[in-house]
Image 1 (cartoon, rainbow, N blue to C red):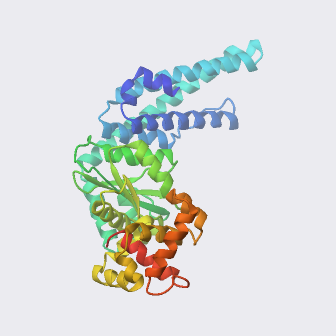
Image 2 (cartoon, rainbow, N blue to C red; image 1 turned 90 degrees about the vertical axis):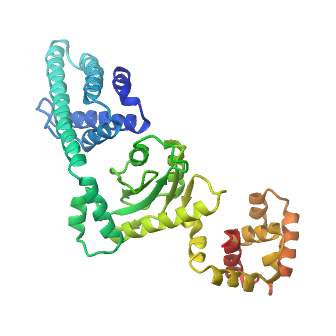
Image 3 (cartoon, rainbow, N blue to C red; image 1 turned 30 degrees about the vertical axis):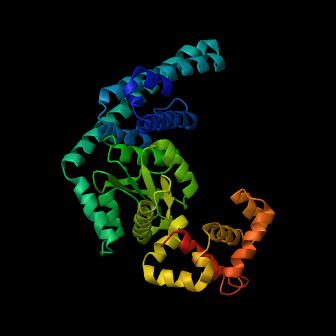
Length: 373
């Protein structure tokens, strides 16, 4: 059905996020109609259009795709659904009942698709009114109040934002390092992330012409590694930084601050990849709050090792990360185990005292030195 829709109306597949939205919409509508038939065979299907079908209105507006394309695509998808209904009726019903069942099903499907299109049309008008009525400005004002810790009630903020603040939130900062990006790419990427993770629609705000703030809502913390993979697939040209998943309105504020801090780390180190998670750079973030104190801590903890060969410091850093496991250290550094042991021995001789019993202090200093605070 999705193939029929995007083949008949190629504009629906002009962007991966839009195509994914069409797919989710068709799937949800088909499931809703089928489930209604299973529960009450032969009865009229209630006009209860699923959220996925209504959400596509926003995507059509943002992508500048005319509603006529969706009407065309839906009707072609409907034809495929009708053919399957006819085949199922012929296979399952007595010959004398096939015509009656077929007629009922075709009429019900047609009525259901018509009701969905009418609801989407109404939602499109609402979306246009919002864009013209300054809703985006009110959303930015509300988000600013939350981020500044202003006394705003959660239910009021939720109504203004159209976003549930009572769940887990994962803040993201998306930006284009060159400034050369297509219009709407930030919202498309955020929407695609939510769809592929089976999450509610995200909250996306434009912070500047090259940067967007995003919040993903979920019923449990998200895996940053999965986010990294999905972001690279959704929009390879963008950079992204993510905060840790945090709960409730305070978490909404905190995860955003973490994402902003992770972005600052990314911009300081050109070797960083396209995605940075706060948890991976938290030591660099904390150390950057007082660089003089951080440098003093590194010198005190590492002694002569602070100015030694970088290979020795990196080997000891990984060794401590791996809980002093030589085999795992060798595997991570693609180096023979005996070489690792030799480097560890040389590094420990340069420490002001043995690393035995000082793993936490030395490990933290090595992490700080690694990030060149």
